Length: 227
Ligand SMILES: *Cc1c(COP(=O)(O)O)cnc(C)c1O
Figure 1 (cartoon, rainbow, N blue to C red):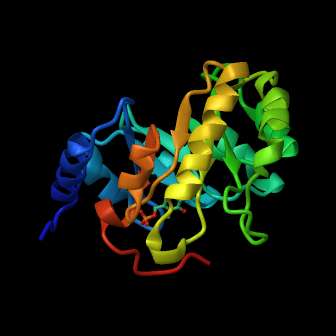
Figure 2 (figure 1 turned 135 degrees about the vertical axis):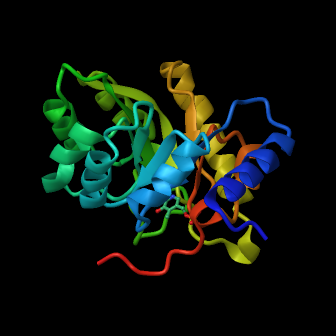
């Protein structure tokens, strides 16, 4: 049993180290619904990148933890256009851009004093009407539009595959790997591929993930639902 956040982090890092991959893989600790104290504990154990889904939580925790000099905030949740201002202010990386309007607002609201906001395009890889994300066939067109916006830096693609038959997301991950390679032909710097969560990250890494997003594997089960 791994009881503490530090132990779960060490265990995840060690499992990650045992998977053969050609790429460097960054672990994003998804701290949604968890208190700032849990993030402090993970930071003390060496974790630097944290993922949040809700804008208000991002703003609150970034403010409470502003004393941690090397913390890096990744926004991974759905983005409503009236909520972009705090994302532009507090996030270092945004994984969930799926339309031009959102990118334009983030670009306009990101201070030129700050480092450019690193952006990933969220792809609707499982073609499910209920999920957000740009359709695979529209990725290159959106990438071309986002890449020219000031104060943003297009760094790659992200996906949340629909829960698959028998828990096997290999097909979706393979599709994403191919899309990422296509994107890199026109945007060689856009090498990041954010995919894989607590239950399927090993498959994602095998298919080229460079960022995995682990919530419950690091912080334990989430025991309340966000409203
Ligand atoms: C909640 C969430 C995660 C983490 O999920 P776990 O199954 O707890 O690892 C990863 N990515 C996104 C987009 C999420 O919303």
